[in-house]
Amino acid sequence: MNALWPRILKSAYRREPIVSFVVTVGAVDTMIGGIGASLPLLSFGLGTIGVAFALRWWQIQRSHSEQQAEPAPEYYLPPHASRPPLPLLTQTKRRRPPY
Image (tube, rainbow, N blue to C red; front, side, top):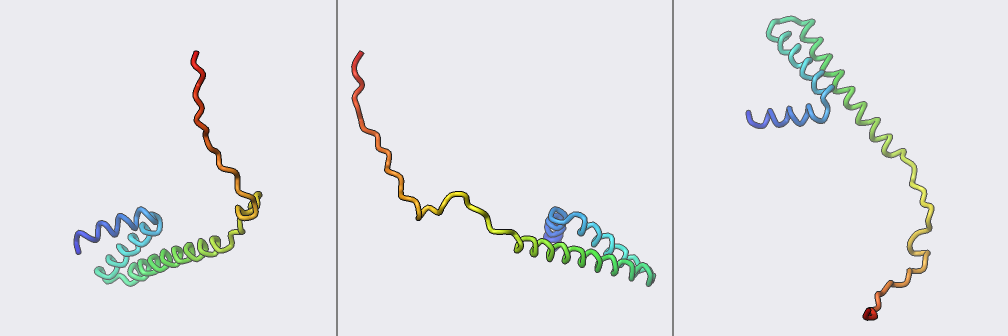
């Protein structure tokens, strides 16, 4: 399990560096507040983590709605089935005249 944590953290920081940083800061504040029995620091850390997760969720929802709202592409040429096929190009083997 110890070898798995660095991989998870690296991939999280590569994908979402800002959200991951805010979650890390909130987790550190939560740990310090929990160990030091500081209720304001503990609640600030938990609130920071909650805001970071809410921000990430909002970003995911916004990107899904933008993907669904994309208009259909316009094609300037008719579909392939409505056009007659082009004749096949064949190369005839001709001998070059000698010089």
